[in-house]
Length: 457
Image 1 (cartoon, helix red, strand yellow):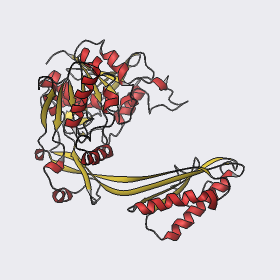
Image 2 (cartoon, rainbow, N blue to C red):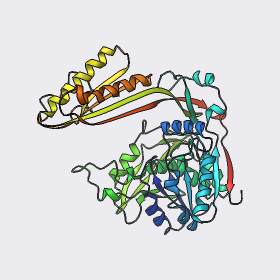
Image 3 (cartoon, one colour):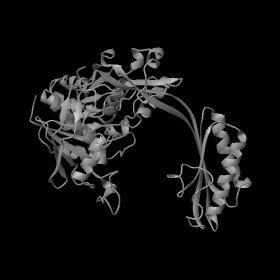
Image 4 (cartoon, rainbow, N blue to C red):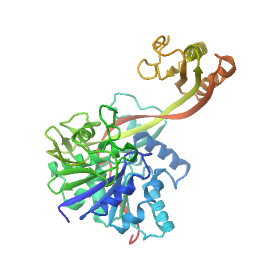
């Protein structure tokens, strides 16, 4: 246990987030007194399944493809300013990700960090597919053939253990997103497994930070209704958390965006199914009595989180083969473009029906029908959009056969010479799909572990 305040910043809220966002966060953290941490949240359900597939092809890969883009620009400054990094960019291969970070440190000539690798979330290592399939899914859906990944959301304790072991960097795979923040707080404040209110406050702090700039104005912005200054340079969040669980949320210095009660409330409610019982691996969070107040410019105070005993089960995401998605698009522009786009759509729909396939098709004219009408025929937007303009026809199919997906894309391509006048700008994309479902497993079936590599390991 060290100081009474801990400072934690976020450098990414999903895999593919801005690669330069961490720099201003690190610069700001470097000016703070007390324990300092930088988290990167880069792992979604399908992201992890894709990483598992990559690891099967190459045992040295399977960590986040964005790891290097996030770590390389800030690693030296973090090590120089005692800013410890915690991230789930280990994905399916935390050890491989940790080794890559050591290579980056050597390449840029900075001191070698001590890295902790947290493993033990892979349910397939302790349970076979038959037993996994015997569990009822939360969604009430059957688990399909071809299980690609089965990873359990483990909690914050292994992260705290890793930090207690002197890790400069902690690389984990599947953990709850708030655990990236809660782990450092458990380590710094010594919160026990039954300090429910403290754990709830730490979980709420993690929930506020886990989506990056969503709490500082990004995704919140809606011009004319919810204006956000300088969104092009939106600052990523930094939270200061006290031993008593008081939270202050701000953002990196000299950046755009804003932190207001409205931005904070939207993020608190994001993916919050039951405000009185938000289940995590470490605690059941109750936000029904939370208070949100503007403390100063771009700083919001959050308090009042309450906690209940953690669940006996842990959520596990099962990812399995989802067949294929075929997509193709073509544009019609200029005089009478809408009528030509409608005709193209009708041609594609009729030829798909003639195939007699039970695949799931849809046909849209983007900009007029793709969001609200479900892509149904006949096209309901006729007469409401300008006859002359620029329209893009999109055809898509979800199916179990790559050949069916390719066939639809070829049909769109054929419109160049076998469809309405003036089609152009053809694009196609055929992708393997992954479906997901969730099950609950006894937390005692998994035994997360921590290993160290690098300096002093």
